[in-house]
Every structure is written in C-alpha cells, then in structure tokens.
Amino acid sequence: MTAYPSVNPDLDLVLERTVDVAPELVWRAWTTPELVVRWFAPKPWSTSSCEIDLQPGGRFHTVMRSPEGTEYPSTGCILVVEEGRTLVFTSGLGPGFRPQVGTDGDFPFTAVIRIERSGNGTKYTATAIHADASAKQSHEKMGFVEGWGTALDQLVETVRGL
Image (cartoon, rainbow, N blue to C red; front, side):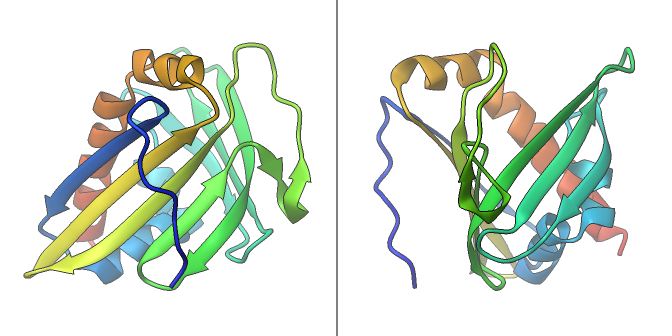
C-alpha cells in the first residue's frame, strides 16, 4: 500500500462521506470514461468527454461544459492506481509525468480518491492537495465542497442504475 502525505488543513481540502453503494461500483464510476461523463461535473454543468489511461503516467482527461456551452478541457497525469481502493491524479503533470504549464487562473492540484468498504456501502474520501494556501482558497471559493459533494451524489445515482 502506498503511503500518502497527511492532510494539511492550510493546503488541502477534504470531502469524506459514506455512501450506500458498493466500493466496486464507486471504483468503476471513477475509472470508466463512459460513466465519468455521466456524473463528474456538478449539474447544471456537464462533462462532454473523458479519456482515462488507467496506469501510473497515464492520461486523465475531461472536458467540462458550462450551462452556456463553453468547454473547459483538463488534462492530468495518473500517479497511483491501487485497484478498487485508491486513484491519485494531478493537474500539475501531463501524461508520461511531463510537467505542464497551466493557463491564467488555473492552479495545479493533486486529487487522492480513497474508497473503503463500510458495512454495505463505501467510505469515500476525496482530498485535493494544493501547493500553497492561495490555491486552496481559490479551489474552496470555486465551491469544492459543494461541487465535489454534488458530483458524488451524481456518481451514486449513476451506479445505482447499473
């Protein structure tokens, strides 16, 4: 099992909840592009496309679409894949671990998605790790807790229909 840095409340944001779907379904929702497009962006936003090369150094690419139709592509690099329990990816690197330059207003972050069985459901922990307090604050002001929480609700609804 991979060691992860402890959460730094000055730099990191955490969403932790227990949901009433099996961990296998949560993992499938995070790692299957056809499912990611169904839940990843909090409504009224949507995800118009997704590509995942599920291996360290692989591409994690999504395109979010605003309610007005503007598209926002995001390409990152998968860092860790622990089948069924941990997915780590970052916007600070591109595929093949290549550093990438963001655009104005972007802030790189690393997402750590932890999936653990909890009774008949799943303990779900999403941590967004930031380089500095200002990036954390920007992500928080964008609505991290509400947005990622809504996306998790949408994930649960998506996998219930499988």
